[in-house]
Image (cartoon, rainbow, N blue to C red; front, side, top):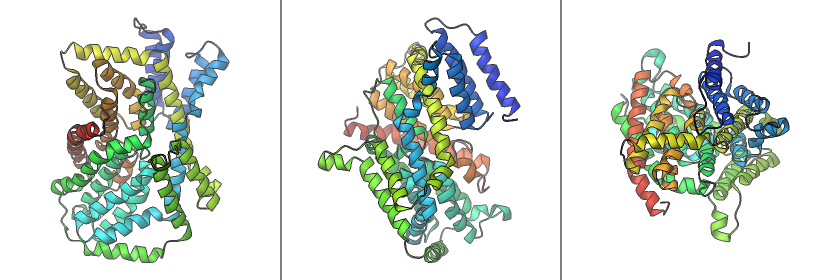
Length: 483
């Protein structure tokens, strides 16, 4: 059987309930309501893991094409179902995932991590900062935060912990491993806030903001980075200190860590040709994404075209082969499910359902007599902490972002300000649980941190980051003239 019976039954029941049993509300077209039924069923299937997310996406495309909820003409309905496959942001994130394979294949990601630990790893706190910096450095070209936090930084973290005999199987996780595992994870999440290309849900946020504002607001790579880098770096600086206080490791001096890192670097030998090329491509992508050619020479380069250039250079130089690209299943999977979810979100917007939901939320908040500032703060908090119910950031963004952002605009929030607030919340929400993002099961699964400790650290970090982005962030955005 290709699906899990119980989650599939729940998803089907929700779809049929909304489609047939609940009357279409006044002001909503039947097609919009029926598309909502399909959408809720697909999101429920993703949350319940009835099928892999890519398989759920294929099911979504099929249902939209066959039910005709977007058009009465079968050929047009099929074109609508496949319409988001030509979305440039979707290809940008998929191709960037392929490029990130080069960090793993060449060993450049590992080298960066061990190099930082060899420089700053004499104390446990220094090791923590080294892990955070390693994640931060490679985040711009690793849209899979699972690959970054789980496949690159986490093995380094484990090797350091085990070198100090900090092993969950021996009951010695408190020596150093618990602290480092939490830093490993929360650095991964803060990096997601700083770069639009650091995690898959971010480009979806960009897309939904553009749709809600009729493209008057487009969060480019450079705009996102400029907005998030100051509050994000403040959060990254404070995070290892806060976790050090909460879960102080038994071992605080770690001269062996620098020795281990130097041994690993020696074993790796000098930088190889492919590593140097990968580093060059990495720096080129950063310059182009940041808009440096436009600032210096007036030459504007599209962000997605830049990403294709990066992959083309990897293929031309042999750093990656086409087989490597084909084997990057996460990239192709992302392109498919991203296209399906964006397509459904777009047509919910076109058919007027998002506007109806936004008006409904706005009316409810207005009846509470709140100012737009208080109302938008309530919307942001509800959006962020509802992530306790989600195991997928993308599913959460697709299900809730459009309606909540639209409600904030209806309350009178400055569009750019509220877009940045909600974008920051999208990253922060992934800090909460051991299933909140793709990297959390990997790091939590190493058993250094109990569930209670993980949830406690996640909630405290979420509060800290909300305060940072809600004060320093908003003031910084004012300085930038974003609102």
